[in-house]
Image (cartoon, rainbow over all chains, first blue to last red; front, side):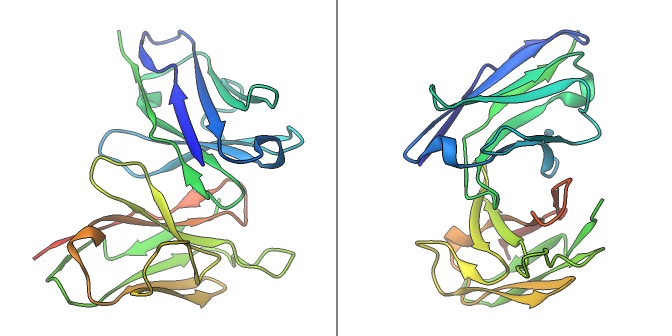
Length: 113
Length: 112
């Protein structure tokens, strides 16, 4: 199993960013997937979940601003981040499965002017 | 939201010592299927989290049997016997019974 995140970077408040998580080593279409973030020096903070059938659930802190999606043909998970705030600054991890089976290496998102 | 209270926040241990970490949830973690979706993760320094134990007591592949998980309903414990240097890092409990998913605050295991 391998999960590789990409798309992070420095972005101004109010702007947008799209993260990707490329999956391999398992049947991607059969598994739900999560995004989880970790602010610098802090603990883990769950962001969103998408089921194998593309049902979605979001944390209140990101509802209406972030959108999780998947492309099973490309074995890729996405997170669209809109209306970014400074408090969204974090490492963003994708994780496989209902039980956080495997995690990617993470991608840094910094929201600052 | 389910609040996960993890104690202690830090532990200083000598190599070979045994330690226990507690994780208490504000609600029962038993799902409607009868299973308990409480897991333990380890985040070594500068690395991404790695799951060690799933559903209270099931060790992931490659995890030594020095690790054990016990508990039920709202009260869970991770025990590490004969701590080795590679066990150091931050341990998190996590629940995937309820949405939103939540994590304990972490327990930092470091060398005495």
